[in-house]
Amino acid sequence: MGAYGWTIVAGLVAIAGLLFLLVLVRHIRGRTRSVRDEPGLWAGRDYLCPQCGARMDQGWVMLGKGAIWSERSAGRPGTFAHIGNALENTISLSIPPAANMAWRCGHCRLLLVDYGKLVGG
Image 1: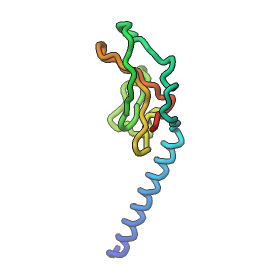
Image 2 (image 1 turned 180 degrees about the vertical axis):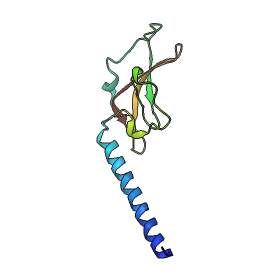
Image 3 (image 1 turned 90 degrees about the vertical axis):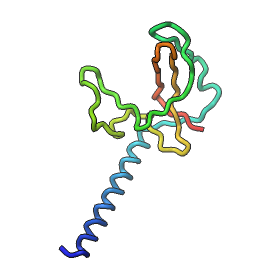
Image 4 (image 1 turned 135 degrees about the vertical axis):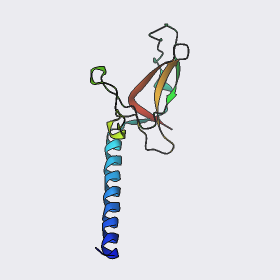
């Protein structure tokens, strides 16, 4: 195959890669629910640490490539877990990114994450 043929093959591979990324982004956005940050969002959402019983601090968490969850009986997520395996509403493709509501106990180092929705600006 000549140089022209390899150029066509490289172009087709690049187009296939871009199409794959487009499908992946659409898939992630289809699994994402985002709401605006409003004062009532936190009403009635005070939680106690299940370990020590202290009031947990309210805040935000961004999970990078999303929260990859695996049932204990299935074992830990593997090395090749990817954003396609992330729980819904744990990846934001917005700029600035939306975040999940979260509560933490600084003493016990426990984190509670609400992934029912992402909260944007």
